[in-house]
Image 1 (tube, rainbow, N blue to C red):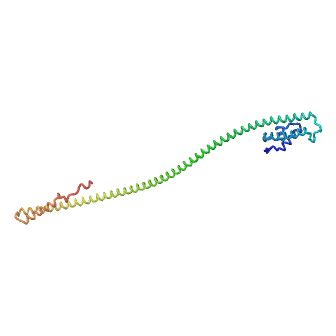
Image 2: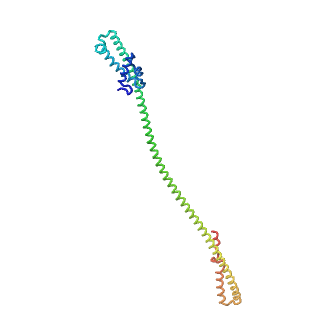
Image 3: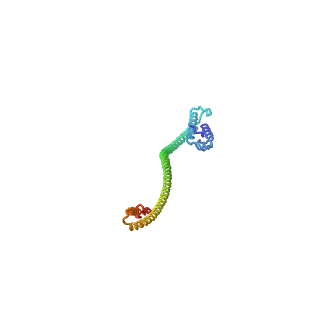
Amino acid sequence: MASKIFNPDHVKSACNALLAKGVRPTIGSVRQHLNIENGSNATLQNLIKQWYTEHTDKRIDAFKTGTTSNAPAEVPESVVELAKQFYRGIQQEARSQAANLIDCVKDDRLWIDQQLTTLVETREHFEAMLAQTREALQLAQSEVKSLKETEARLNYELESARKTAYDADKARQQALHTQQLLEQENHMLKQIEEMAYENHRVLLQQQQENHKRQHETIHQCVDSLIDELEEQPNNKVLLAVHKLLCGVLEDASPSNPLLQIDTNRGTN
């Protein structure tokens, strides 16, 4: 396959032009004649070799057979010998260039094999790195999923804890309010109890004072009756009245438990 830069017809024309000038067609001379610096030397060498083969075969055959239209009827032996030397020189040069080309191809092939080996190793390395990256990515995605699940669970637990704390605080406030109400109620009950005790004490005190006055009045009456009984010792009516008054005096005595004030109540 010909190179996109070296056209076979252009190379053949260049070789013919160089030969007409007495210049040997080579890679360097053909490049200089075509003014081409790029392109493959191997491709150019093959085209020059092809030109040498076609051109030399035609010229030698023409000289040997005398069939060339431009050749004289009789070719001098010196010209034939010169042509043979030229042909052998061309063949030797072609073999040398072919050997160089083969060495170049071998070197190129070795370099290509080395590059292919390096590329294969690099590809295997990158494939291994890609596999590790994918595995790490899958692991990271799994960890992200686990972290999201953990975050959702923690958010739920946090919300539950907040609700529990709110309920507990509300219950504490209710308990504190209830305690305050109970304390107020106990305080009111204590005040009521103290007021009741004070009223009871005042009432008992008034009753004791009334009983005391009654007792004093009865004692005065009894003393008067006793004085009369002493004057009339045989009067049965007065004796009966005396016993009755003694019983009344005993019931109206301040030592009667019904008339005692509960002095221990105030200390409770």
